[in-house]
Length: 153
Image (cartoon, rainbow, N blue to C red):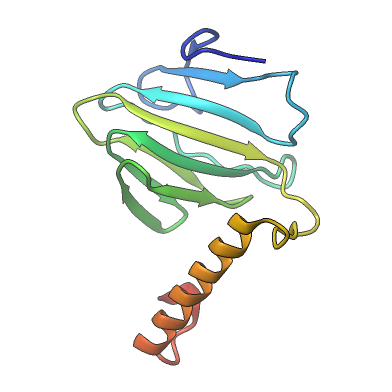
């Protein structure tokens, strides 16, 4: 199956955000993955709109910037983002994405309900490589800031 860029894109006002955005939902009703995969294009000044996915529909969302610059709010944290940067919005978190640049912002958004168990990716070389890199960075951060919990570093 193939879906070409823009082929099924539509204009959408997301969560009462600023300015409509273009959304393409890849392989709607065709993929068996338990997630939705979107490409969003927000115009300059566009925003998703502050919202949360709570107990009635607990969703986790991953935002990956492809082009442009953005600011992402997740609860009390704010992150300035550029191409290749990603933010994870856990279920129940209040979050919003805003295009801070003068050009369109393109973001891949992957969302779905959290699994009841964390998948074991160790059988894959990329999973082992990612875990080793993360563990090395966490050990280095612990050496630089001893006694400070990981979530506060």
